[in-house]
Image (tube, rainbow, N blue to C red):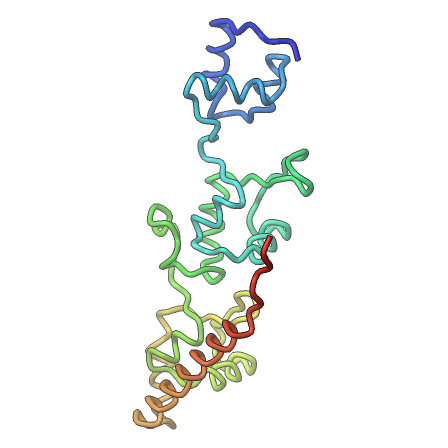
Length: 216
């Protein structure tokens, strides 16, 4: 590869376009490769990060989830508007603008846990949705009873988050009052204790059955 002689005009163009355009666009404008432009940006101390544009990995940090299946689903099905960049890895990459991210947070608060969302974006989430397990621990009926109620349509506000049911936090007092009609407090505390033991046993069993890594 012929070594490029950088000029002041080249550096000024990179400074003006960085943060607004992709490296590929800048390289095409200069008639160079992306690696050459990336190396020059590193020398000049210019960040390659585009302002107001996020990748799917950055989206996972903002939403506070590492569930790649969930992230791929909302991106590839169009639940959150995203633009695909060809030529980046085998499957390409996705770009999400800040405007589309804010619209997604406002329209689909049931799809993620608001308490895990980055603090800078929690203001755009209308309300918090909780799992049936959290509702159960906070005084609602047993999870099985809540699932039956969701399937029967008794809780019309319930929505699906993947394979789990979630409900808006403001209706929790109503669920607690409904539980108290047929479940005494003593029995409810016993159910919570048994459920916690069962969950701990499942976690321990999963660790025991986890296969050890082979030595390299």
